[in-house]
Image 1 (cartoon, protein in one colour):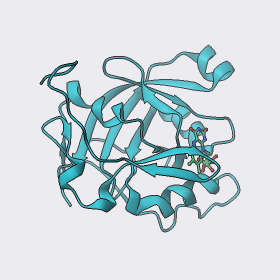
Image 2 (cartoon, rainbow, N blue to C red; image 1 turned 180 degrees about the horizontal axis):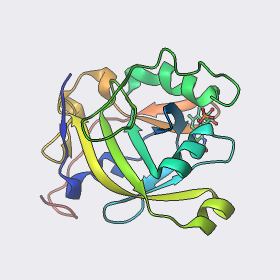
Image 3 (tube, rainbow, N blue to C red; image 1 turned 30 degrees about the vertical axis):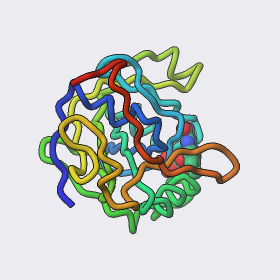
Length: 190
Ligand SMILES: Cc1cc2nc3c(=O)[nH]c(=O)nc-3n(C[C@H](O)[C@H](O)[C@H](O)COP(=O)(O)O)c2cc1C
């Protein structure tokens, strides 16, 4: 697997498909990662994420001012469920077996094997964060696994089945993204 930078103007497309995500952060040497389904596009170059007060990761985001949105794939579902079902607050060695790596220039843990990554700098809105648990971030860097996202587009139909994004519904039910369908008109020609 090789990840390559995604042009920032196209990075929103990683989230356009509405995937279940993971969110990580780090502060003072403490790394954490959580599952997060309520994450989406917050306007051009921006991400919006609902991060509840139960999440220890939130404290790291509040202190560091940064978070990483991961776009995990079907092959990683056990990891997604694991990080969503355990908290660093009650399990100090939660992340012992999580395969973190780092990209140059960013002291932020990233989980190996995802289809995409967006590094987000918090745009502070203390009231929204406190009252609504909503965090807005500006995307400052992004990468993708080029087997499945390249040239600013998803290529699920040509990629291995295990690289499909996963979409949460409810009650433990997820869907893998399906087969593509394309129209010769509509938005976003480039
Ligand atoms: C599929 C899935 C989706 C989740 N989505 C969210 C979410 O959007 N926002 C949130 O605050 N918690 C969400 N959670 C719960 C957190 O991942 C969970 O509280 C986690 O234990 C937090 O880890 P931490 O305390 O180590 O940060 C989700 C969990 C799962 C399993």
